[in-house]
Amino acid sequence: MLNLNDIMETINMIQSENLDIRTITMGISLLDCIDSDCDKSCEKIYNKITRLAGNLVKVGEDIEKEYGIPIINKRISVTPIAMIVAASGGDPVKYAKALQKAADATGVNFIGGYSALVHKGFSAGDIELIKSIPEALSETTNICSSVNIGSTKSGINMDAVKIMGQIVRQTAEITADRDCIGCAKLVVFCNAVEDNPFMAGAFHGVGEPDCVIHVGVSGPGVVQAAIKKCPDGDLGEIAEVIKRTAFKITRMGQLVGTEASRRLGVPFGIVDLSLAPTPAVGDSVAHILEEMGLGRCGIHGTTAALAMLNDAVKKGGVMASSSVGGLSGAFIPVSEDAGMIDAARSGDLLIEKLEAMTAVCSVGLDMIVIPGETPAETVSAIIADEAAIGMVNSKTTAVRVIPAIGKKHGEELEFGGLLGSGPVMNVNMNFSPKKFIDRAGRIPAPMQSLKN
Image (cartoon, rainbow, N blue to C red):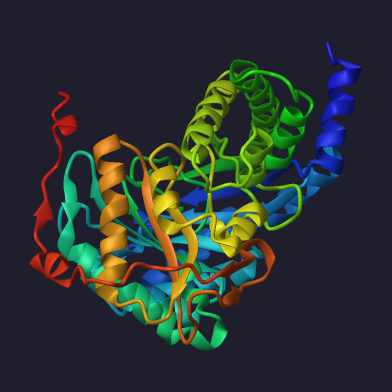
């Protein structure tokens, strides 16, 4: 039976506490779009995406109106394009442009999947796609790219790490006239997942159905408001408050996902219950940590508070849905989180602390603006460090850093919208990791990989 108090509480969450469905993402397999002719393959890709996702935006908007639940983004993820390039040949950028054409036709805000999976080595199509990333992201506006360079089972492909440091810099340089926006659409993974609905890292894994709907929920403001109502509770009580709140948030995601699946006639995949912040006031993961009692996000104690938050979110969410997946936890993207931005500006939040925090939360070093003079080998070393955390801890980690070409520590880069703005954070460049990165090869998988 519906409880009036629960209904009113949910309405208040939406109106006052920034509760929303961050994205409904349709995953589409492009394997049947392979053709010996590159142009025909691109035509098949466009036709399949527009056929399956033609009503995605409208369905999302209809659900918003009927249920009063904000659905901020409608997105598409596709089979890693490197696989299509390997089979169909041709210039990879042509596929990026075909995806952009499909994004324009369907009205979605992003298509993810201009991707390659190279955690154990390069196969046909991988190098070609990776080298094309700067051009592809420069010549499109709604396409996102990701590269998986490591996993717990395979170790870290340091050849790929070295290349991706160079690609990140090239992408920043080629889009420098647009505040280096290309790098905001490029992420480097370790242990990438196949059902991630969030950008820039979403792609449609080969183990997924031909077409599927995933939902990403969000509610940092709701969690913060719930903790605020428990000013004198101990940490055990705070964890219970977070769990109950995560349950309510996830139930809303389950409802929207099920309804979107029914209306679009495709299977429902997962709810990703990650707390995804925005630059809006009252929608910050950093502010949740501060509500727990930290004077500022980034000081000592931040990692412990974040670990508890992440664990409680997962425990509450899994009770609300039998289909929890994706990344599911707490995101800490600096430029997309008002509290993180403030902490980085004041110097209380450093990259080294962010790296420690990534060991206990979803994903990794996300939307961090670094000095434009940062050399490629230092970017590679940042990627390697974060991949090592993911590999050893059997979790997904990622790096999305933006070298701000022409800017130095203390200056700012402005993206606008959900991508927000970010202060250029200091990077330790006193000594170079170049010799280490130039060794290349592969960092072997840890003992945790031998679980069979």
